[in-house]
Length: 312
Image (cartoon, rainbow, N blue to C red; front, side, top):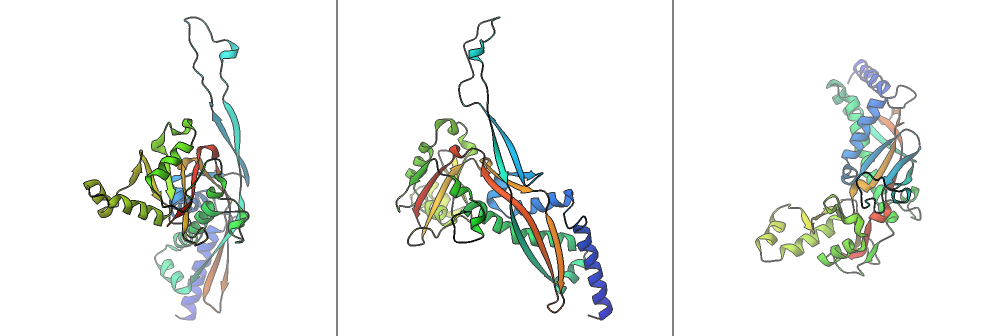
């Protein structure tokens, strides 16, 4: 590549980066929304969860529910007494976005190919989202403030937060009895809409449970062996999540399962996503650093149940 064409390439790259980093490096609202969509696309769990664009690093989401009976015996022409009237339970879910950074390197060859096709901005957003999305899902699931891993120690993920209803499998495999026990451990009020719930577990646990069903000498057993048919228990699907841990326990061969409505998982992403870039001339690489803040909370932790010490 000649000096002139190389300089032209870098000038075009600078213009494309300038479009993304206008306003002090903060993405424009439309760009930020697109980036969030790309982030969510990389995550199996976040595609099913409730993703909340946060207007500020700390944001409260209102929760309104009726926890007790609201119907009373009625009499024509007679209003309910003050004692018979119902008040909703009002509370707030506070999302406190924590700071994270992702860095993506684009070589001169990548820049050249994408500038010629006019796709550099799209390439930048997609590569950063791909680099950050997987890590984001990991901490949303496995975050633990007591972890020795500095990355995972930033915030507590959904597995750490689910504490109210725990079923100890004690080193056994994932079976229909465990799935039954998870359902039974939840308060009845959360089972009114079982079809909205899901068993979330590791890919290996799903495979082993699916294989146990396939061992039955029936047509139903064959479909779990031959097809990627969703596995259901009492109408609730078993959903494998790639980043669910499969190295827990003393032998590093145990996992967990979480029963919840995935929409109960709220992932808050602060809208002010920042992109900054600099060029490493000797390496022929453009380095782009993305800064974002996010948090994860259950809207109602009491509506979750967790099975621990599942043997793989």
